[in-house]
Every structure is written in structure tokens, then in C-alpha cells.
Length: 276
Length: 227
Image (cartoon, rainbow over all chains, first blue to last red; front, side):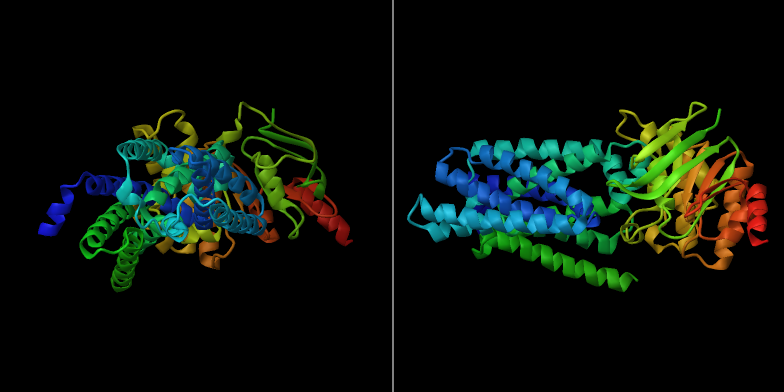
């Protein structure tokens, strides 16, 4: 406990906790929609794209890499959604192509134009987010906070529309809802969340942050509203627990958070079983 | 003026035609059954009526001031919905979406409308129940209630009884009949020719030969063919 209080004196630890909670909250909100729409794989594909973009940013020595990573990821999200909509299988293949391609080119670029002597360390921290959360600058914290607020506001304002488009796209379309616009909005928001979450858990583990809280909440509750609220709470709890454990036990932040999410899922699964 | 007029429709996807030269009209108060084998383009017709796909050629026009988004639609369920965590009320409320305009949330009148529809379908007591725990027949009632919330003049039903047992099927048909008697215009796709002939006022038969007319005319024609 003393150790924790001591660490909390440092601004970078406080930043990490603020950003961690915000990211966890955002990522869980759309998780339910992604899981139910069978879009989980888009999140995975996009995270690899974000890795590739990050590599480009590193090589180009862009001062604020988010400014480059964010637009590229959003663009890819729109592309993936366009191809993924018509035929499921073809869309799957496209996503696999883009994501693996981005991963390969990202690593290649970082190898060809190394910016520091510790290349493996750089790659590892981009993939698993091992330290980046603890090296945030105040400007990054602000950017993250603003984007989170935007994501949460959009989600609340469009909550009913998101529900409708998720539950039954055809019905929504038939009654005059602009489904394509909402799908686009969902894709853009996912891209934003993924870029944000890269700081927290790294690009390989982002999907876990999006999917686990939603799946856990779905074990416990049966209405969309309750599932959404519960997954937000579980996600924030998991992120907080993971951050604190990683500080106290000196473990990598990203994987500790994901491990917490996995444990929470296990518990929820058991509770869901018992309740039935 | 008819509620819906289709003239010389050619239906299909990406230039591939599945049904040709279909013409029919739906007057207020009609109960039109669309019958025909699998692959004869029944579902494509429905999707065309709803404006989800464009006809390859031909025209489809709404009349009597009916707007495209005032058509209530009962789609066939897919896997996603069967396991979807949502309460009955949440789903029925979502029929209101196009009434919302720029409002982000449902208003009192939207909730009242949903309640009324649930009452009509006899599922008001299930309002807070999880959708995925309901029986097939109850799920169909929920989706029908949602269609009622969305529209008050024309309902389009895509195989409303598929997968239901005979007792529940009969209940479903009687529910639809009641709605029709209360003034709702119906377009229903069905496999079941016997039911179509006992329930409908008009028949659209799709397939190699296309027939459209009143039920009586259809029976006459069938008789003629047998002789």
C-alpha cells in the first residue's frame, strides 16, 4: 500500500491511471457492438495497421506520432468496412491481408531505418505496450482525454441508433435509418479507440481490451443497456486492477491488464453458469 | 390510388435476374400473399419493396401518401438475433427510430407507442424479459410488435411462421388476421399455399409463370389448369 501511495506521487503514474481508465471505458462501449456484429476481427486487423503506421511515424521521426497514426487507421477502418460488408468471406480475407501486410511492412521499415540501438525493445513496446503508458507527455494525456470524451459523447447520443443497427441492420435500413453512415461512424470510432489503446496495451493486445469486457458482461446480463454498462464497469475495473498490480509487482502493464480481463471473464462465465 | 404499385419489375442482384416481369397493386386493406418455390425471388421482391435493393428494371411506386419508412417489416431472424442480449422492450422501442428525427433519445410518445404494440401482441408482461430466452413464437411476436411500432398502415412479413410448431403457427396467423381486420394492409411471403388461400385476399404467385389477382381468380385458374 505504501508503495502504491509513493508511486501515486509521480505525475507519470497518475497520467497512466487517468489514460488507462479512459481508454478502458471507451474500448468497452463499442465492444458489445463489435462482438455482436461479428466485427471483432476488424479491431484486430486495425490494430496491426496502427502498428504499421506507428513504424512509419517512427521512421519519419514525426514529433507527435498520433497525428499520423490516427488518420491512417481511420482510413483503413473505412476501407475494411466497405469491403467487408458485401461478402463476409472476401472481407475476412481482405482484413487478413491488410493486417498481416501492415505488420510485416512495419517491422521491415523499423529494421531498415532503425532509429535507436534497441530495435527489439522498440518493436516489443509497440506490440505489447510495455512502457509507453508510463512515458506519456501531458499533451498526449490531453489528446487522449479529449478523444475519449468525444467517443463517449458520440456513443451516448447515438446509443439507440447503434443498438438498432447492431440488432437488425435490415430492419433499420427498411425504416429509413442511414445504416451506412452509422457503420462508418462505428468504424471511425473503433479506429480512434484502437489508436488510443495502443498506448495502454500495445497493438497486439487491443482486441482483448475491446472484446473481453463485452463477453464477460454478456454472461451476466440479458439486456443491451445492462450489458453495455456492466462491460464499461468491468473494463475500467480490469484496467485499474491491472495497472495497480503491474506497478506493485513490476509486471508489463498491457499484459497484466489483459490477464485481469481474462480472469474477470472466467469469473463471469462461472457466475453465468451457476445462475442458469 | 393504390398503396403500392409495381409495374414490369425485373428483380435480381448484379445484373443476374431472379424474377421477371412482375406487376401487381396493393390497395388499402388488402392481404396479399406472395407464394412460389424457393429461389423464385420472393425475398428479393420484399427487399425491393422496402427499398433495400433496386429493381433491374420496371417501377415500384408508393401511393396514398405512404412513405418508404412507414412500411413495417418483419424480417426472418438470423443467428445474430437469436443470441442477442436485449430486453423485449428495447427491441420493440427500436421500431421508433425513424420517428426520432434529431432527438437522441426516445420520448414519452415513443414509449407509449411501444407499450401499445406490446399490449396488442400480448407480450406486455414480458417487456423486461431477455429476448433470447423467449420461445420462437414469442420472439416473432416481439418482432411483429416492433413492426407495428414502425408502421401503422402496411406490414411486410417475410415467412412469419417459419420454424414454429403448428399450435403457435395458428396463433400467429390469427394474430395477423386480427391486425388485418383492424385495417392493416398486409404483404406476406409464405411457403404454405393452403394458408395463403385461406387467409389472403390476393395472391401473387412467383415462378416460371407469374400470377397476380384475387384469391378467387387464382383458384379459378388452378382449376382450369387441372382440367
